[in-house]
Length: 101
Length: 255
Image (cartoon, rainbow over all chains, first blue to last red; front, side, top):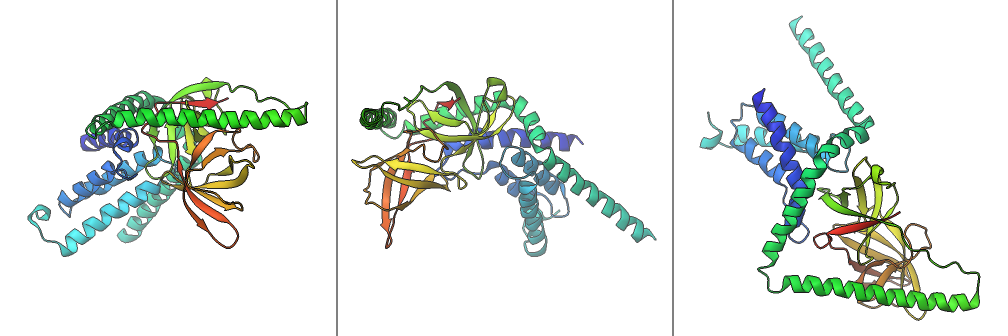
C-alpha cells in the first residue's frame, strides 16, 4: 500500500516535471519523456515474475492523460503495453543477472 | 465450479474498470479541473525553473541572450511595419468609404505559460474562467505574435491550441502592393504550411493573420515564408512561426 502511495506521489511530480520543465530542454523540438524512461527502467530492473511495474505504468499513464489532450486511458494503454511487452520479452528471451531472482 | 467463479470475478472487475474509464472520460473536464486547481502553482514554479535552466545552458552558446533580444526587437519592428502597412491600406480605404469602422483596441488579459502537452501542440496557461476568459479567445505575445486560441477552459487555467497544431487552420495574408490571401494549417511540432497561394511568394515574406475567416483578429504576426514549392497551379510553402515557446514569458489573451 505504501509502495502504491509513493508511486502515485512520484508519478504525479514526474508528470508535472514532464509538462512544465522538460519542454525547455527540447532538442530540435524533441522532448525527452522522463515518465516513459522511469517505466522502462523499472520494468527492466524488476524481476520478471513481479508485476508492480505494470501498476506503475497505470499510475503514470493516468497522470500523463490528465495533463495531455488525449482521452483518459490513452497513455495508460500505451505505457501498460510497453511494460507488458518488456516483461514478456525479458522473461522469454533475455537472461541477464538483473532479471533473475 | 471454481473456474466459473473465477471467470465471473474477472468479468466483474473488467466491467468495473471499463465503467470507471467511461465515467472518467464523461466527467474528464471536472477530473482534469480538479487536478489543475492544485497543480497550477507547482507548474508555474517548474516552468520558471525550466526557463532559467534552458537560459543557463543557452548562455554557453555565445551571445544567445543578445540574439533573443534582437529577435524580439525584430519582431516588434516587423509588427510595426505590418501595422503601418495596415494603416496605409486602411487610410486608402477610408478615403474611398467614409463609413469604415476603425479597429478598436484590444482588451488584454496577461497570463503565464505553465505547461506544454507531451505529444501535441497545446499549452496550458494560468488564467481561466474566474479571470473572465472563455473558449475561442485569441492568445498573442507582447509583440503581437499569434500564439493560438483557447480551446478548453477551467476555473484558473486554460488549454491553448497553438497555431501549429494539426487541427488549426486559418486565413492569412502576405503584405505586398496587392495583398496575397491564402490559408495556413498547422503540421504539429511548431511547423506550418501555407497552401493554395495563386500568386508568386518569396522566402522571408511575412505572413500575418487576416480576419476573413473570423478566427483571429487582423494583422497579427504569424511567421516567415521558407521552402517554397510550386505545383501546376498553386504555391505551397513551409512557414516558420514567430512564436517561440522558450522565449515567451508573458502572453496575452484578447478578450
